[in-house]
Length: 318
Image (cartoon, rainbow, N blue to C red; front, side):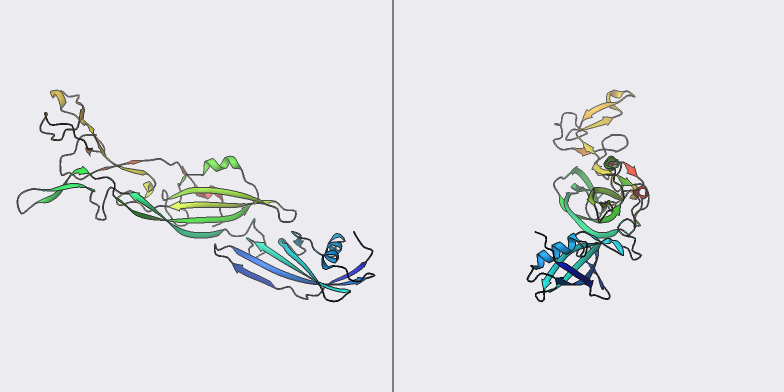
């Protein structure tokens, strides 16, 4: 129940001191403490909570989540009142601010918080560290001048693949959920953070609502994965799906003696029509679909599976 007590509240801290910190994720925060003294007139032995609550109700003390009078982005996090004597109390008010800029512009104009990290996955590979196909091989050529040649692809070989990734966090005034689909799983068509077109892919986008004081905004977080082009893959096709060009069927332009050719099933021995069908795929030419001669270097198909978008249109403050 409210009392009829009168309160004389004064701010005792002549100069508030701000403390700036950075957390494990690289997020900056600013903290500030204000101290108030309270003298009660008319009542003895009021509890600290009762004094604190009545002073807040009368507007004499800041309440939780209230903004600092000089900076609307500094918000009250905690209020703690202690009784020093039967009539004398002291209150400490802690403010905290996330995502600020040095000019006090708040989260809507502060530079984005950027954190780089590494992604490692175990992935199947079709080429070794020297660029040679992972396949059964033999030596061809004259004695003393033999060269390596490949017969059939070998599957199931894996290795750890590491890529760089980045999380970008910033405040935005408005968030359109429909726009999510214009960027999610899209590759960059322009240079972004120094990475050339085709090497970045947006992995995820999240937006959390925030309301410091009377202002509403969104905390936007974008996670982007980068990819180093594998072996001889062109840079702009780093996110293309790379598939070894192989199969059980191939195009034979000379089949039947005519000029039209036909699709044939790969035989164990391409020079023996009575040999059984090959139980494993054979190397094919990626442009013609014809069977490659034994010993010819393997070829790879590149498939565009992600659309492109200009990352500059996201207006990230990086």
